[in-house]
Image 1 (tube, helix red, strand yellow):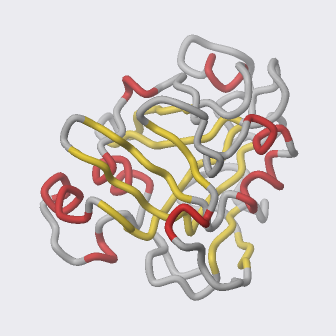
Image 2 (image 1 turned 180 degrees about the vertical axis):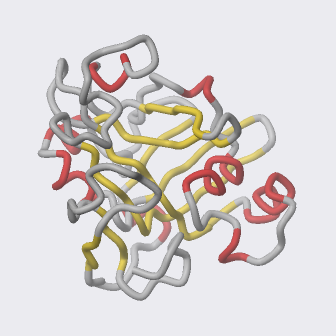
Length: 197
């Protein structure tokens, strides 16, 4: 296994801890169209007792992946048109996950531009629906392990790392319940965020 691929133990910490640790790491998708990669700059944590969490009312067919082992992909459809990419966290049997909201594009940028129909770099992955489209993530990735296969998460060093950064903490975006919880985490000052943070 590539030593820079994040190991299963990375995902076994608390969901809030994982949401913070994911900042700066690199999401890589190797598809038939080519390789795309982006650095995570914005995340949101969703906890089992949180009314905005899909798992708060128990396990269903839709959210079953959230109750599986940590370190797997949870992809779901919103508004009937946009997929969202999540990282499953917490122990098996506990439905929690981290939504990845924004990436800084690193590789495969021309392919991202084709998929998005956009040319401006900061518009390619600055939102959960945008990044999924740019990276070529689909519902077929739901349940996939992030430690091997086409879709993997790597340590920051995979693309040379980034300077030390501050983490800004704020309320989550685009939800109607649990809005008061400070569970959104951003690389402070990044120009690639979905919203200034």
